[in-house]
Length: 164
Length: 393
Image 1 (cartoon, each protein chain N blue to C red):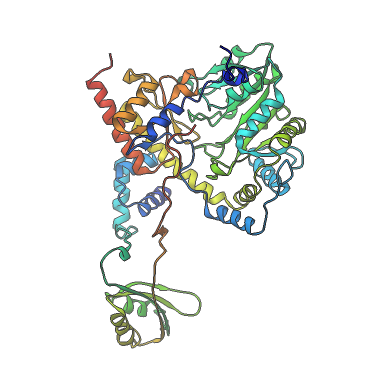
Image 2 (cartoon, rainbow over the protein chains, first blue to last red):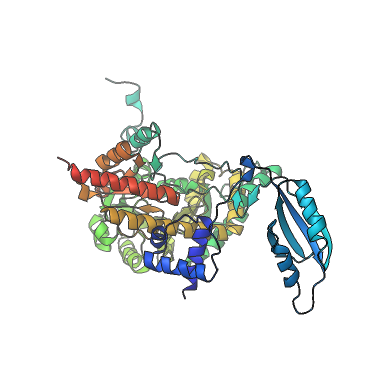
């Protein structure tokens, strides 16, 4: 399989998931058939997991609170951190889980309707899990940039219409 | 009638106004125009470069610099040029200028005596001819053709040579055609230059923007270093057009002569912009390469699209312009550009403004977003289809 092509396709789709196979084919000098087949394969292999929009929820009338929680755990024999991570990420409230180096082990992102809901999740569900030794909850106040996207980007077209 | 106007310098009075002006005025009055007419990157200067400039202001770097530029910037430029096999002494063979444009002006003024002939392959960027005329030269244009990928051939150059030939101006990768000269092409040109004792002013501002091959500088060919002024700058490769930092590199005797003009007319390039250029050259390679890859993808997109529409387009191997052949439409370049703008709201630059052999072509810059390129192509397709239902004349 052509790794360079796969990488380029993922790079383009990660930037803009709405690009059509035809456009991608032109940009990379391939045929749409090759691009479609490669994308299908990437999907089957779960390299591409989902196509979704980057949404600035602050601009919508929704009540939503995001918390980033530092979780310390006791790793277990044989399965290390994976088993406890699995227990955590199966909760619907949990949007992301990552194993971190440094002062704590798992970084967990939780989204709820309000602070109370998130607090209840942490105190009743997360902190009580076996092998979770401590949690530190940080509520997110404002997102400026996420996954390479600046939320309040004011960079517009500043060039003159025609220049030599 | 002898007006005050008549007393202006005849050289200046006789300079034609830029052919782009009319389209600029027209396009500026319209709504919902997609412009493929912009000759500069669509990236904002990378943040680390902007930040370095702000830091330099905090540090109070608001003074003059040495005439030839910050010594450490000259060192970085000399180091950078080694990637093209060029070796220049930063203390005497590099000059930092206000954009590549100033370097072109200085080089021509330093090299040209009144009545000398300056040879300019066309179509090309619009500044060389006026600069040569202002320097007192006679301009001899050499046509390049789509059939040769708009490369300059030794035969065409040879035909333009006269006993008064003095300077050859090269601009490759080329604005507006996107043509590049490969080593063998340049060797043939160098051979002519050596036999006829020509100086070469080589504008290599688009050197980083080459696709599927590496840029070759004519100054790196045997015997050419002593008679070539390499002109380049930060504008295109590092998305720094507004900073106006360019440079010239050449043999000490020419650079010293250019330095003399520069020190009396300009003094030095802006200090804070030189600090920014320093940061870009030291730490800007990965951002630059990312931008080049992005241009390359859009280049392929627009070339494929133009060919599908029925506007044959040779493969531009450099810069960020496609130069499609619009003769199948039966329109002139000016008619095509004007009607496309008025009927579909897409701005392109008629090829003839870059010299007579550009007639029959238009310049489309692909330094714009994928979405806008695709929308522009849709509109151009509609425009061309509409023409075929209502043929000209």
